[in-house]
Amino acid sequence: MSAAWRQLVLLSLAELGALGLWFSANAVLPALSRDWQLGDAGRAGLTLAVQLGFIVGTLGSALANLPDVVSPRRVVVWSTLLGAAANAAVALWVDGLGPALTLRFVTGVAMAGAYPPAMKIMATWFREGRGLAIGLLIGALTVGSASPYLIQGIGDLPWRGTLLTASLLALVGAVMAQTFVTEGPHRFPPARFDLRMAAAVFRERGARLACFGYFGHMWELYAMWAWVGVFLAESLDARGGGSYAGLNAAGATFVVIAAGAPGCWLGGVASDRWGRTTLTIVAMALSGACALVTGLTFGGPPLLTLLLALVWGVTIVADSAQFSTAITELSPPAYVGTALTTQTCVGFALTLVTIWLVPALVRRGGWPAAFAALAIGPMLGIVAMARLRRLPESVRLAGGRR
Image (tube, rainbow, N blue to C red; front, side, top):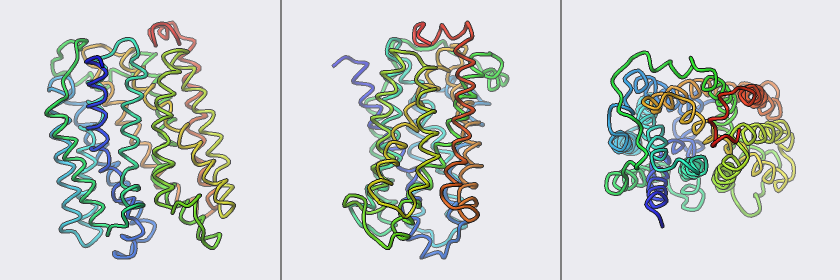
């Protein structure tokens, strides 16, 4: 195995452990709702706190050019340790929503240092095949995000045990990153602090359109990940019980979200072979179609619901890495880390809207209306990537494969 692929495996494993912190509270929402008597606002708040923390963290990181003036490996390690500590504190000492929201916010800030800098590290190891490499990394992040549902689904642990297990896995990830991960031979030029570079990604036409495509993708992604577990559980309840091919709702949620990992791999292969805009347009068309039809199966045959949710889980994240890869190809080289961080900051700000919107729409129009609203994002994202495809700057994507 080459050094680049060895680093891809090691960094992916480290990130898999770190990203389990993101949805650790979502995986135990039924228990938290019961113990803390949470309504829709409280349940949404536990997810929104992480998203808001991530936005604040990425904004501060972008303004300070942190991923470009500090070793990205160091940022990843210390951020993961901070997130593991905040998550463990919820399990060990918290008995109510208020302190939990504060600690989940801190976890989100930590994820801002654990996620975007890892993409920059991976880009230093690959020029050819960069789309596949970052796609595999995002696939590991996807499995990591889903891992608390697996812990809950097969271990039947108390909610505190699930959170502590997620923190332990994040600690292992931090140790792996510190011990084994290094930057590669294709390092980007050193950068100096420049406050203006946080917004530079929006001044270039190509990078700006890649960001707009990403924003459409993000409108859909995290709202689906945050609420699909609730949808699957309530769909079974509406039917009067049952299972998803032998899986309980938590196990099925893990399978649906983790299905994005092979989607990321396939997306990376297709993007490097046929082009970034081609892959992102196709993936958003498919995921948008799934958003329109999956909610219609609520309370229906569980196997049909699971199959549609699986297709959605694969396609909704298949393009995610390719927007980031496009930014590494279209942005000023010395500030690639800052550009990636700015892109993710604004994209995650949009998730605050849709994560809040879904339960509100469920109350008014049911799950079909709530999920259909998510299709608006990929539709607009397709328009942005089609426009990018027509620009001369697009020849810089995937070695000329637009």
